[in-house]
Length: 369
Ligand code: SF4
Image (cartoon, rainbow, N blue to C red; front, side, top):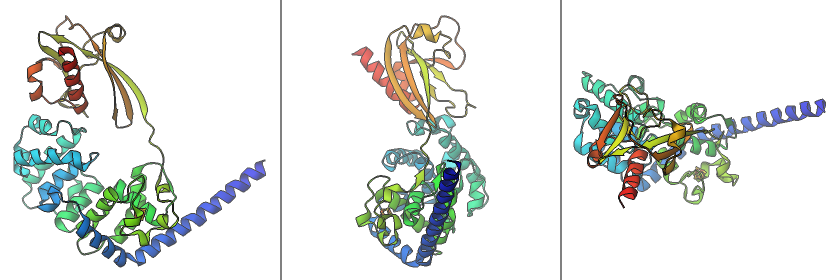
């Protein structure tokens, strides 16, 4: 038995080594044909790129704001937010001078509010630069800017030779090379494909090339059912040749941790009790939500014997959270500073997290029906 295991492990290692050597050969061939690849991609991008505000009338500011908004959020969701944002905060000085509460209000519903706070702080730093900095290294010093965002901003705005490697690009490169490496997460996959992405980057218009790769991932090389028959780089794609594009990339499934939370709906004379996170809170600073039973100093077990108004689920990073919202009597004791009574009529002027904005509207409508 021991001999068999050792034999099969050896066999597996040998197969893995041969396979990784084959991937390296495929990647090398792709790099040798990079000029052809770049031309095919660029020609397709010129005729097929979607019309988007940051492309139609590009500016550094629009590129920066759109890149922040597009982290974790789809283009169609971002478009109305970006239009409102640009109308009110049209440039770095305007954003730098805006109060944080206003910035968060404009961001309300996009989620991941640390992006808005980082963008605000970034604008304050950029507005104070005596001259514009144009390298990815300089931009990476700014709040909320990692390797991908710095490459996107500086390649698009300044023609810096920096390759963008996000989930879309990883998917395309893994398929082009049929790379069957098992990646533990998307960060390690991005790191692994960065040298190939850099080798494929043209010296002329690297920003267009980066945008073309992202566009290909967003509109053709879908995670499921990629449109290989109409793909401009199908002739270079090892996964399509093997007839199994969806087998790549091989990323370990994200482990989600389940959490439950009991929240309270305390309504009194047209006012609703809300919890406002502290200004220094990591995720939801200055954002209002329905309080948890503990925040309202109520016993969760007793609260859970009351009327269940809604049971909702939401995902935050690696947590899948079930939020049960119960009607509860207002706490009698003096309230801590982070609990505030808000008139239902004035809710619109506050910043709530996106899910709580929807849930509050839904429950209020049901109770007033
Ligand atoms: Fe993706 Fe298919 Fe194009 Fe390959 S041929 S890059 S799998 S869409």
